Length: 147
Length: 148
Image (cartoon, rainbow over all chains, first blue to last red; front, side, top):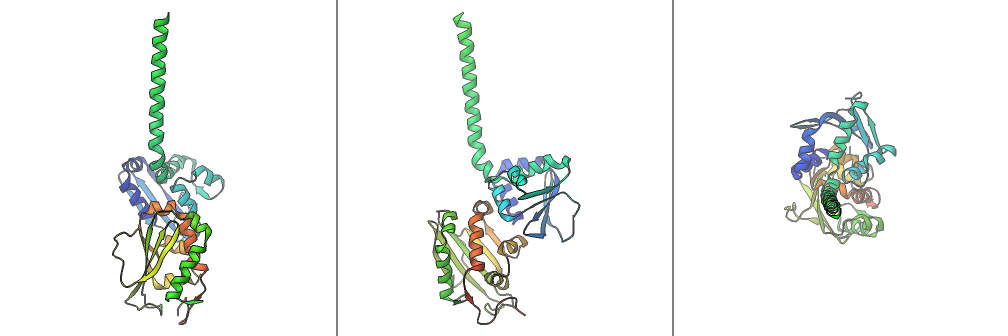
């Protein structure tokens, strides 16, 4: 399931592909419903490796555990990773130095938030920037012409 | 009580799904066509070892419009999702003995379709599979899983 999701995510979105290329690290995704169901994800710049983890393997590796619905809510942008972490719906066992990678990976997985949200937000940012620049320019003209 | 894979059983499933107010709320309003493929695995007495059963569910406006068996594998035109698994897996889910989400995560059920759409509608998917697994009072004339 996760394999297909990541494949489709990458093929549908060049933005996601760029984001994936910037990530470097690995983690194990464990299903909360069944701890024996786990996938190791390795982001290595130009490639992403996904491999099923056998029971008992990778006990000491950085890992993220969540149930199906929490993963779905995270990927669809309905819930933030922080909210899930606070509510213990998402449990991460990582070193503090791995935190930027973990956040980057969770951001990579939030496909719908990116598809629906970033374009309007980007347009709004551009509109605010233009409005700010226009107001600043008008203020400068007023300053130099009124005195 | 209806015999598994009988016309009455498909009708019961349809009624059951349409009676779920929560599922109706969760299901997207657009038309969604799903094909289920039950592959014979030599263990199930209901599906020939070298054969398969196919059925199709069509959702529209949040309700099931069709839930019917097919004579052959659905071609794929107009299909949104295809769920394929061995008969024992489906029957074990229908008997409430296997969690369908775990079966999906373990790869026992192969899923073809837009995974992003699936994730976005995961609550509805979970409700649907829970209904399939736990609610219909199915009759098993040749025994139910686990098969020996």
